[in-house]
Length: 396
Ligand SMILES: Cc1cc2nc3c(=O)[nH]c(=O)nc-3n(C[C@H](O)[C@H](O)[C@H](O)COP(=O)(O)OP(=O)(O)OC[C@H]3O[C@@H](n4cnc5c(N)ncnc54)[C@H](O)[C@@H]3O)c2cc1C
Image 1: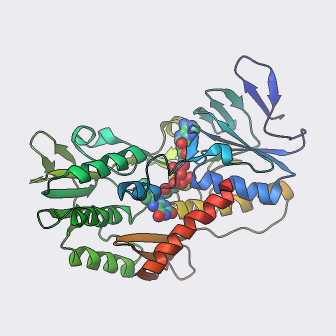
Image 2: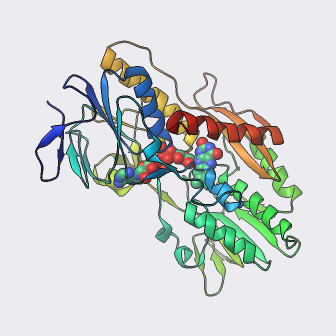
């Protein structure tokens, strides 16, 4: 079947860049951590044989961890945006379009600008936040999982007069297992810097049984860091809603007062993937070894997919390597598979220190996750982790 990109109201145009009718058309939906790495790998390995179309609704990429930089006041929201205009790779065309429909059986994608029929389709649309899932949260809560939310919380902390700060993980799964703990440690630093830490009580609540369930060592280190700073930590509890008028957080069987409520929002897969029939139990169902969906020629990776591995950029990248190997095999008819499930997680402890967990979820004897640090050296290494990807994807 010829692959065409039909721009609304116009004649069919060749799909992708410089395909010459010979190349395999690959369409990647979502230019986040996973989509950017996959497009880069395909350009490196198959530029002459593929025409890759990479689509995203935004005009700029932001690293998830940059939101912590905004929260801590190290960068502004504008400074952490990396325009997609800087993404230029042989064999890849970036288009700023919004995906409005996906028919995975027909491998057809409709955006707000065109209709596409790629040979291979990769869904890498990430996870969205469902603010309305927690009653009262949109009106009276703060968050730092968006750039705007991080800037708003930074400003609130600068004006806060001291009191009870409650940070709650509002649902599972959520992006980046350490991020709630990083957040409360940064709040501690912000209040200490303003001399109002003593006048405040910090409390973090999570439905999970440990901060980093895969790593006993990393969990113990985080719990130690919380205890050293006098931050209360409640596990296996969930805040279901807040009453902003009374400043009360609602648990299953009791309420708790707060002065400042920070939530890690409930996450959900983008609606377009649900309407496509790609989801099972709320997330895109994939084979954890190949990231293939039940539809031939359709893959899904990163936060939108349920592969049994936590949602983090480092694992989206690992999944991109797996899918790239699959596509190389499909296009060239040779090449071995790649094993996924590996990643480096950095954890901000505040006060300039960072810890590191080297996770391998699919290690032959079961998951391994040794913990290193926290030290200032790992803070420098984390900065390098971002810089390397920035240079690789955006040459900047
Ligand atoms: C505070 C915080 C700290 C974090 N720290 C780390 C860290 O230290 N290390 C780490 O590895 N991870 C970290 N993460 C997690 C990381 O950012 C995500 O897990 C990662 O971005 C997931 O990559 P992805 O490609 O699956 O999705 P994303 O990077 O979210 O990309 C999905 C893309 O799809 C696009 N999209 C969605 N719907 C549509 C549509 N309908 N049409 C067109 N485009 C669409 C979006 O615009 C987006 O660009 C952190 C996250 C947060 C919030």
